[in-house]
Amino acid sequence: MNDKVTLPESWLKKFKNEKLRNLVSDSMMWFTMPNPMSAEGRKRLKRNEPVFRLAESLSVDYAFEPNDNGDFELIPASVRNQGIGFSASRFLDGIDLDIYFFPCDFSEDSKRKLPPYSIRVPIESVSDIKLAVECAEKYFPMFNDRQSAIIPFSNSRIAVLKGMFIDDFSKTSKICREATADGEEYEIRNCERFLEFIKTVGLN
Image (cartoon, rainbow, N blue to C red):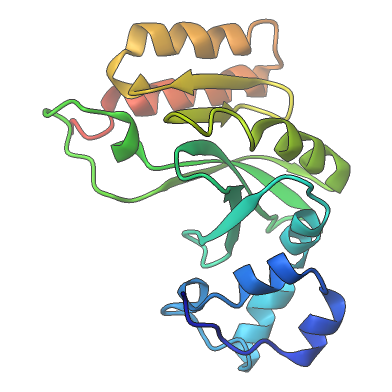
């Protein structure tokens, strides 16, 4: 069982959901981070309040990981189901929809040198938490019995990729481009950037 850290009383008064409290107080979420009782730790909690409000609104299971900003990344509970994440927006009082996954989990190509690190790319910021709730409720529970990645190009344009999708670029690019067919310019651009990434990741 993981050790727990003490959370400020002011935070506990705002967020009473027991699952949320347990996940936020997990010591792994504070590894290398300022203690939550410190001034910097309290600022971190305050900064992440939008994603905590999103977590409280979900009926599906979820987990947290510390992301590259040191913030809380809201992700599917199953480590086999990756690709989609949510974090507190740095630009508005809302939520960022992120591409969030570990490339090393989706390739068996010995030519690729893939470290065990996650990739996070913010795709879209929304101020309406209902949009994030609908997206998470739909996609978090998918394919928990097998390795899969639910890759968002927007809240409504999402590619469902299974298995070692990085190793089959032709199939993966077809699925992703079909997901963004007739989409907005930014959705198509997000798709193409993702495809360019997986085409070359670990080969440079």
